[in-house]
Length: 460
Image (cartoon, rainbow, N blue to C red; front, side, top):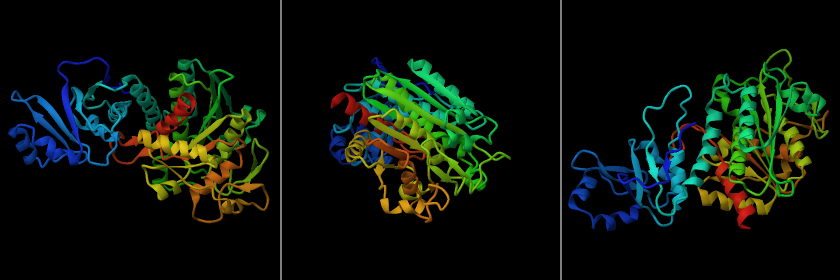
């Protein structure tokens, strides 16, 4: 895992960074030496958002760094510095007062990420020395959770199949002193997880459901469920090559749920936590489930398989039913469920669904506070009949070619029996580099959900 480049202790030789809003530039620059103003003029630097100006000293080293934060940018912009500055030690000498210093440190740590399992990074990440108001420990814990999720998603399926994902979950359980259980292969049928077995039985590595439990039995109960399809061929409704290329990331929901669970445990939030991960590979063989099959679920509802490429909601049906048997006070599920979510909101914003107005408001507030963008979409009741089946209780897709993400949420809702539930249709991928988000696997909605839970459990 990438070492988190945050230093708690002061470093005398740390290079100062002056981060300025665009509207502050002219006033700030008038109090600076002519040489600095001329350098900025030559480079057309006016503190535009994301612009970096390295100011050299007379000996050729870096004297200071000027950084443009724009007038509307969030603290996540500081991730650019970790992505673009040369190796060395830096400190924030000046930053806009409305930006949280700990969030700045978090952005730096997130921007410093590199996936180096197969190819070493070209240079060491620049290090940020904690300044006044920064909680480097908190920023480090949050970044470590996001880095774990990114590593799991970025690892290709030949090294991150169901067995490897189980080993990762076992490692988190061991680290955090959590109870761990794995139900594998035909034992799924004996323990009444028929849908997980049906979807994953064609693969070389057996399907399974993983469960971590942690915390005081009498504490508020939080359940996290994550879709763990380690590779999705589409099944017999096979994907085209363009649609299959990134399907190593189809276990992104499990990566986020596991990493969020680890963060909750390391922060010692006062909860009874349950993390449930249905894990399969959606492969093709003579034993693959077929379009038109009718498969029972743990809840007792029967599902006609309209499309084998809508498999994520199928395995989640059994996992959500299990989670609800524990009567959680809050239930969150994460899944790379639909391409329709990307059509609606693009790669940066994660849609979420809930019928709980208070939970929706709390998530929106938390999202804004930590600059982790999520957006509520409706569980539109009028679309429910579109999943009716003539031979089963329901089918796994809707009749229309539109509203695909909403249909996914509506399908999952049929297996939820608790009030406070939210479903996140995540992308788990950043297609091109963004501030604090290098290209590749990502942990969408993780930070917003942690902020919401911490506010509810500690500050309320």
